[in-house]
Structures are given as C-alpha cells and as structure tokens.
Length: 82
Length: 82
Image (cartoon, each protein chain N blue to C red):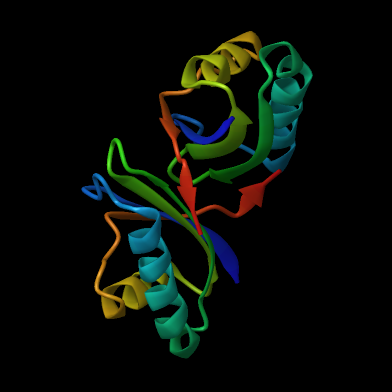
C-alpha cells in the first residue's frame, strides 16, 4: 500500500456539501478495490480538488473515482512524506 | 487562517532525507510569517511535491518557501476539506 495524491480540475464553485457528497461516494465505492480515501481538499476558486488515498495502485484509485462518477485528471504515487 | 496546498515541480529523484530537510527548512522559516507547514508529500518519479499549510495568505506561504530556498510553482487556497 502506498499513498496517492490525485487531482481533479474543473470543479469551480464546488460547495462544502458537494465536496462532502463526492468524498462519501468515494468512501462507498472504495472497499472492493482495497483503497481508502483519507482526505480531500478543494479550492472553489480555481476548481482544483486534491485527494489523498492509501491504495494498492494508481489504477485502483482511478477505478474508485470512476465508480463514484468523478474520474481524476492526475493520479500520482506519493511514497515520501514528512 | 486558511489551508493552502502548494505544488513544486522538478523534484525528480528526491529522497526521503532531502524531503525531510526541505520540510525542516520551511518549519525553521515559517514563524515570522504566521504560517505552519503541516504536511508534505512527494512523488520522486514525476518530481512533484505537495505541501499543506495553514497560513494567513498565499503570499505568506510563498515567502516562507522562498526564504527556505525552494519557491513553489503553484499556491492554492483550499478552504474546503473532508
């Protein structure tokens, strides 16, 4: 298991409620893939959303997002942190 | 105070030790600006580093990174999280 940071663009004006609903959709879809979405941050101004997950692969992260209806634009492993 | 996510590119092959040293340089420089760098994640493969901070402004985040010798390529407020 590795940490992944994935990025969504085009989410301008996203609200706290919409972000929470999107995160809950990921949490509902993640189990079959062995993924856990730990945290999500959003900038409604630029429309960028960052998601931090612990997952077996980038493909698994993307499959969960696709199942939840919001595929990511980028998925990067982030094996180092401090 | 708002959370900010800033992004650095061009850090290919960064090691755990280099990431820790860079984070420590931010922690040493942050106090005068009222910024706190909470966490940093790195992908040595693509050379992308993400930093999460709590700060009074994007300019304050950037000033700390500049003082520490590694200005960010992007700084985004992320007022929403889940």
